[in-house]
Structures are given as C-alpha cells and as structure tokens.
Image (cartoon, rainbow, N blue to C red; front, side, top):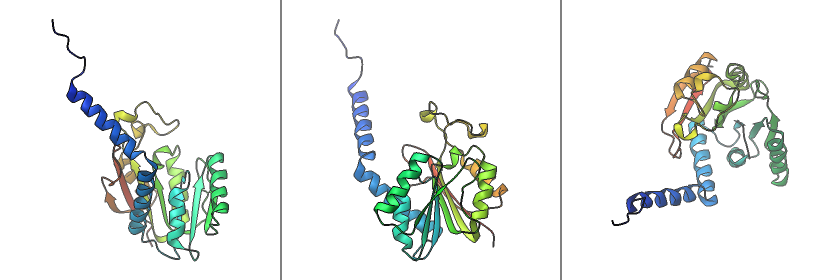
Length: 220
C-alpha cells in the first residue's frame, strides 16, 4: 500500500499563506501604517483639525492619541483616558518624553470616563466599547463630556468563534461573546441620547476581525 501524507499539499499551502499573512499584519511597519490610517479616517469622520479638542477613551499604549496630538496641534487638546494603572503611567511618560503638552492623561473608572463636562468636540474609541461592564453609566458620562453638536466614533468588532476562548468578565450577556454586535452599540448609544450619523461597515482595516465603526452626535 502506498503511503499518503496526512495533509494535502493544498492544505499545507493554505496554512503557509495564513501564517505569512499573520506575520505581515503583525509587523511593526504594517501596524504603524494601520494606526496612521485609522487616525486619518477617524479625524475625517469626526471633523478634527488644528484647535480641536478630542478624547480617546481607553487609549491603551496611546498610539492614536499621539497621532491626534499632531493633528490638533498645540492650539488643540487630546485627552487620553485609561483604567489600568500601568497604562496610565506609560501614557504620562509618553506625554512627558515626547513633550506633548497638548496631551492630557485622565484616569477613568468602570462607570465613568473621567472626562470633564462639555470638554470635547469629539470622542473616539477603538476595540474598547465591548469591555464596558456598565455601558449605560459610561455612555452617560460620555454624553456629558461631549459638547452639543460634537461627534463620537465607536470602532469595535463583532463576537466571532475565533474569539470565543477570550471572554471579557463582567460585561452584559447581550454581547454574545468577546466583541459586541453593532446593533447593540446603536441601541445603547441612542438610549443615552446620542443620534446615529453614519456607519462604516466593514472598517477597512478590520481583518481578520469583523470590525465596524458607528458615528454619533450629541444634539445641539
């Protein structure tokens, strides 16, 4: 009997192609380019420019906040919020080391963004909304922080089988896993008082996740 390999050449080819694509998408150069393009697209959606005041909720390592600080200039302001103490320390260090006098770091909580009332022309968050354990209270704090007529962009991803093993503790059951359906975002944000302006679905740099962006405004 002739021996046959357990996997076909086609299957191995697909596996190698997937591995190559994964390496490409996680490369520092690609990540920097993707961050820059995300910031450009978000700035366009939110109408940001020199002198604008914008907040990034859940800023993480602050990559987008730094780019936005360049865009709004020193006549503008960027608020970067975080809950994690390590991230807060890193963001403050970045602002100091890079002499970003227009970048203000703010500590948030489970129920509050920490942003001052009526402080922002615009707010954005990327892959953050699905972590909200108290979305109604957090959304209310975002509504207070946004100036009348201001815009807020929620960029996130749908729950998929790929992410089923990474559960987020404490979030509402209607999320359906790690992620959040866009219709849930629209429902919760409009309940908080925001008005839906635009949907970008899919977000162009979402692969392999099913990313989307919902843009809302605070009525004047």
